[in-house]
Amino acid sequence: MGVSAVVRLGVRSATSEASVNSITLFVVLLCLCILIGHLLEKNRWMTESVTALLIGLCTGIVILLNTEGKSSHILVFNEDLFFIYLLPPIIFNAGFQVKKKRFFQNFMTITLLGAVGSLVSFVIISLGSMQLFKKLDIGFLEMGDYLALGAIFSATDSVCTLQVLDQDETPLLYSLVFGEGVVNDATSVALFNAIQKFDLSHINSTIAMEFSGSFLVLLFASMVLGVVVGLLSAYIIKKLYLGRHSTDREVALMILMAYLSYMVAELFDLSGILTVFFCGLVMSHYTWHNVTESSRVTTKHAFATFSFVSEIFIFLYVGMDALDIEKWKFVKESPGTSVGVSSILLGLVLVGRAAFVFPLCFLSNLTRRSQTDKIGFKQQVTVWWAGLMRGAVSVALAYNWFTMSGHTQQRGNAVMITSTITVVLFTNVVCGLLTKPLVRFLLPQQKQFDSIMMSAESEMSLAMPLLLANGEDSKSNMSSDNMPRPSSLRMFLTTPTRSVHYYWRKFDDSYMRPVFGGRGFVPYAPGSPNENMHQSLLGEQIIVE
Image (cartoon, rainbow, N blue to C red):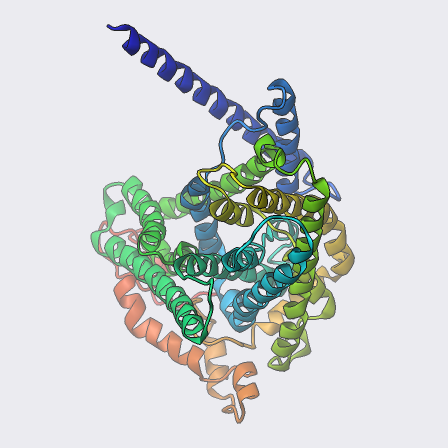
């Protein structure tokens, strides 16, 4: 063996050992986050995401001191790691575990807040930064940079608030915060991808129309792809009865096809977030009911565990990466500039959030006839607060736009990266610490029972057509038959009539579920996944989810 070969082998061995050490330390930190998060479960201030973020910061400080200021993290941040491996399980589990009836009941409001609201925030942040940054010495920024900033800071992170809310106690509020978060992330990433595709240095009406058309087609195609992959998985598992021989196969197929939906969307430059979310919705409605009972338990907890670990991983790394010395050395000569940019961006986030939450909630309340269905002012404040936090999506998009292979090369780009990290840290630590006391102040414990009763009443009012939930019981069917027809658009949106929801259920029961399966619609066959449950499910056609 030559000298050069020995040297290469030694370098490779040293690199491999460093990687093993880094991964081992990171796994230890993940375990520590879970344990400390459990111990602080009843704490008035702390949430698991804030705990992971603070542990990441403390770890970064220790590493920074140990390496004499050369590095603060043990793994190099890569947006591909985030978008390909960490984000899909979080979004899929969100679609898989969501209460579909409540989600689609408020789908119009969720769409307004998540899609229209993101566009409003995008415009305010882009235009505001374009006007205010001119007064600061941050280097040259092009039109595309300002638009990218709008997309980057339109992406919210409502994990802290969702960890405090309970979807059984505050179902309407949880549905709005949760649904808006998913649609918002998908819209922001889709906007960001569309900005990358178009030359926006000289915008005219033609480019604006093409940009809008491309954006809408991207969203629609992404949703369709998610539904198609979900239905395909349901059909395959229903026809082949994989669980007859091995439950491992059907569990593996569900996991792989869920991930396949995301990767296919990315392959065709679609929104993987929307695709995998709708894939999760369809899988929970059809595919999950086609597998064996043991596979149902396994998949439900497996998806939740993947999502939980990914969330902790993200917050832990963001905390460590915030102290990366390479980004800060470019702005150490003028720290006031970075503080000014961060303050402006934070102010635009606050203004942009308020500019659409309260007006759009007001418009949504106009279509809600029952007082118990209306979004109260305190609930609107909670929705506004939940969307103030910025997280890993903003960091990943900022890295994608303002760095090259994870490294910052120009002063202006370094200012944008450090400002993004500052806003993310401030909103997550400060707003995250205040989330628990704020929610408890706005939604006191003694009103939880009233909230549950309001929820039960509001189940009778279906504000959103195309309800993918399994439906209501037969009594609600009979009552809807005797309900008068709507005489106006407002009555159509607020009165439970034989409208789109009714016809969707008939279509689902007559055509979709007999083909793709679902609770009570999988035909009995020896050795099929429903063999043991056949007698209990006989004659049952719908359930309330």
